[in-house]
Structures are given as C-alpha cells and as structure tokens.
Image 1 (tube, helix red, strand yellow):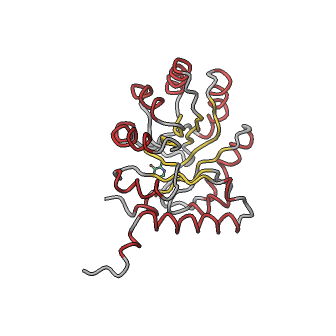
Image 2 (cartoon, rainbow, N blue to C red):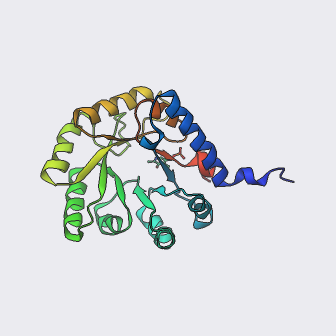
Image 3 (cartoon, helix red, strand yellow):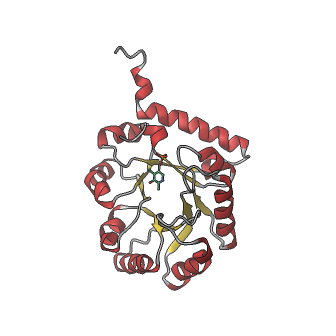
Length: 228
Ligand SMILES: *Cc1c(COP(=O)(O)O)cnc(C)c1O
C-alpha cells in the first residue's frame, strides 16, 4: 500500500495535534495552558518511538512499570537530562528503591505500607520526589487507589506524619462511565486538602478533565496510536 502522507503516522505529528487540542480546551475553560502538564505515556513503546518526541521538545513522560522503565529510560535520560519521568502504575514495595532512583514524580501512592517505604527511601537517599495520591474514584474492587472516604486521613498520614511531598491527587475514572462527576469529586477532595495538583484525563477524556481543573493529563494512545 502506498502511503500518501507517511508523516501523519509519526508520534510527533500526533503530539502536535494533541497539543493543539489541549490549547483549545484551555481556551474553552478559560485556563492558562502552562497550568496543564502533558504527560506523554510511553509504556510499551521503545526508544525509536520516544526519541522523535524528545527531538520536538517533549520532556514529561509516564511509565507504568518500573522494570520496563529501567530498560529504556536511563539511556534516554542520559541524552536528555531535563526529562521528567512519572510513575503512573502500581508500585510494589520491593521496587521502591529503583523507582525512587529513576523516576522524578510518583503518581501512585495508594497505601500506608507503600507510603512508609517511600518515606524511608527518600529520607535515606535525599531524593525527595513530588508524589500524588491515587484515588480509586469509582470505588472499583479491581482498581488500585485509596477509597474516597479514606483520602483525607491518608493525605494526613503521608504529608504530616511521613513527610512526603504530596502535590496532588490522581485518578482513573471507571471505563464507560461519564468522567465529569469523578473529575469534579477528585477536584473537591484536592481542594479541601489544600492540594493544587490534579492528575486526571487520558486520551479519551482529557478535554473534559481540563474543564474540571486537571493540572496533569496522561496521554498515550492519542500520541502513539493504539497499544498492540
Ligand atoms: C496507559 C495509561 C494512560 C494513558 O492512556 P491512553 O488512553 O492511552 O491515553 C494514562 N494513565 C494511566 C494510569 C495509564 O496506565
């Protein structure tokens, strides 16, 4: 098959399109574009797909597995030290050490045992990373995250008792449900806890998330295409 415009399949072209949609969503919501971080979710994609994005200036990336990130990011980070790498997947306590060493932001603090392990490791290494608390906003049994009813106490534990640098809340709304009520709920939980960061919105719903105050959106498939 002859491609008329093969360039249109490049992730950097898709990134441009996503950036344009982010700008429009910010205009519609009367928000400043610099208040919304675009976290490019590169899980399952190799350096050959990531390098073109680094080349056009994308600096914030998200990965959901520590081991996968360890296989590709040390080299990419050596080439582009300003990269800011977010862990957006579940973190086992036995992976806390490599995670704190490699990542720049942890978005998935979701239980006391993990919070304590992160606190110990960050104190020991002096790498005090900004963290988000993941909230199981739809109270789905199979999903990670703190139950909505436990959020205030857990923020208190992480921030006041353990001294973690909690910058905000993160959520993944239930698939197939209208996301806006979940986004509004997360925003209210962050507000009452004095937290400015809201990591919410993915390829299918980031415009809605921006309208509801997202400060970080996590975009994978809209940039790289569907995952195989
Ligand atoms: C994969 C993933 C994303 C990106 O999802 P897309 O729908 O591909 O944009 C965002 N957040 C988390 C936690 C993910 O695991």
